Image 1 (cartoon, rainbow, N blue to C red):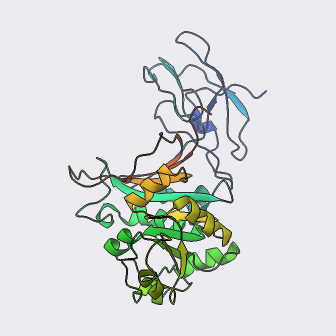
Image 2 (image 1 turned 120 degrees about the vertical axis):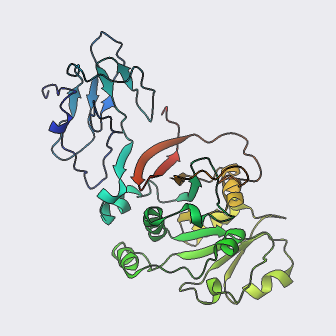
Amino acid sequence: MVPPVPLHAPRALPTTWSPAWSPITVPHEHSLLRGARVGGRADHGRAAPAVGLPRLAGSPRAVEARPARRGLTAPPRVRRSSRCRLVGGVGYVVAVAEVVFRKLDELTDDEVYAAYAPPEPDWLRVNFVASADGAATLEGLSGPLSGAEDKRVFKVLRARCDVLLAGSGTVRAEGYGPLVLSAERMAWRRSQGLPEVPVMAIATRTASLDPASGIFTEAPRRPILICPADLPDSRVEPFREVADVVAVGTGAVDYAAAVAALRERGLRQILCEGGPHVFGDLIAAGLADELDVTISPKLVGAGPMRIAEGAPAEEATPLRLRHVLEAGGNLILRYVRGSSDE
């Protein structure tokens, strides 16, 4: 048993991540125990619980929280978060386990790639940006809400996927062109045994797109058009020369069937970039495994839609917060499916 580590001396604990991107706590300036996991409850005046540490290089496997020095008092109440209990009271606080907080500019590209490693071979993640007051667009577009900080994660997510899925409305509004990556991103993909670029998949209810546009004709890999099976042949046929057509659903795209069709093609890691109606349909179908959302430090006001629109889901999907990255006032959040009570 390692000796207890005083709560007021967190700097004694190593803070270097392991290659597996081990969890680190949300910081509190007076009482940071990096990666602490609460083993039980403690009330004011009683002994603080034993806690365990994530696997950080050289760190002990267990420590015990002790009273802080005089003048270093914890907040009066700390709410439960993630998969552990937070304990608050005068003199005691234990921060969350399995939630990482870091500044993005402190991370290497390899660490950012590792931060977004998918937990399963078949995984569907959705990436959005939203204003601080919940708007999905500014002046009708998501681009003005984004910035260089957000784009760094945006590009990593694209590099990690097998297929990039976007709705036709988003493709038109945001001016999507052929799906290409930088030389560095392509080199990373080659090092992982992946093709140099992902496949582009466009979901559309009406096929109201131009088959002569660059997203089709200049694509480095043959794109996929996903549409309802009952669309007239006259609407679909022009696309067969420039894309593979996946026709599923009646009157609307059947996203469960579409996702199954993509995975049958070996495209198992799916990144969806919207738009809101596509995300709403994925939620309603129970297909979203992960939400990566950047909260932009802007107030947009009333009017714009949320990041999910369309048919309501039968029930809410519980999510677990995996990490928080901060960059330029943006909060870059990663949520994965699963209850915080698990």
